[in-house]
Length: 338
Ligand SMILES: Cc1ncc(C[n+]2csc(CCOP(=O)(O)OP(=O)(O)O)c2C)c(N)n1
Ligand code: SF4
Ligand SMILES: [Mg+2]
Image 1 (cartoon, protein in one colour):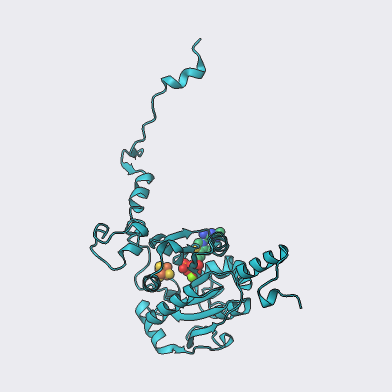
Image 2: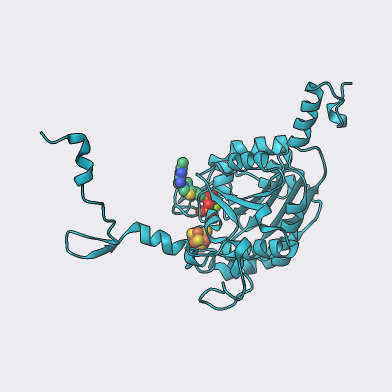
């Protein structure tokens, strides 16, 4: 009887075929090949302008992008590209050590930035970007952790995480691109869809009240709250810089055209028409009461920096508490016994 335990010696070695052949005889590219080509980029810390200017030639943002992920999926006229450009410019101008900034996104058209930007990025599950970012910040307190996601991701499925991270004043920065709907999945109604606006799931007009996001952020405890649109590229870039440097929970809402879904359903025209609308209907009002900054369809839009204040962060309070547990005096006024 042959010894079965030694049979593996006679086994033919497994050959990994580069391609597989379908039933019809056509050659299909293996998934692994696609992944290899999509991930072909140089990590930002090793980027060399002379060696790594990708096939398109030299572009000032080459090092911040992953060319293997291009062409992107965003529709023409969408505001997401301009907003990402503002963010990259902000990071460039701050001249931050690229290994000290991480981007966390959820799922959606907006969430795609995690794939396109050549930084430490994490494309997490739908609605879970904030808890992921909180864990990251606690483990790596010296990193700037930015959550970059859509209105549906952050305020529908992820709404609970948002209010509690703001309440705790976790030192993370939230960038919410508000296009008033679930764009990626076909333009469904979202908690940000203005009353009476149409979406694919509210074809007769939305009958629910919507969130006023800056008001939610301030009510929950955010220390820095601002709103701009995809048109306000310079102001937006400056706000991103301020938010990244600010200690505590910051919230930046960016209104963005979604010509393929929201605009189409509401006959608002293309991306350019929406930009014209922003130009004619935005009122810059720094320090405005966010309660008065409610959005609506065909209404004026109040933009600006609404709140910028200081208070101890979650980690400040945690460290003070730890000191008390170890018999030391707390340093923060709020931790002292009255
Ligand atoms: C648990 C779970 N539920 C639902 C979905 C489907 N889904 C993917 S993206 C998305 C909505 C995204 O909307 P938003 O965050 O506003 O992003 P946008 O596409 O508008 O930028 C939904 C519902 C999912 N991926 N996972
Ligand atoms: S569906 Fe809307 S948000 Fe998504 S890429 Fe197209 S225009 Fe932009
Ligand atoms: Mg959206």
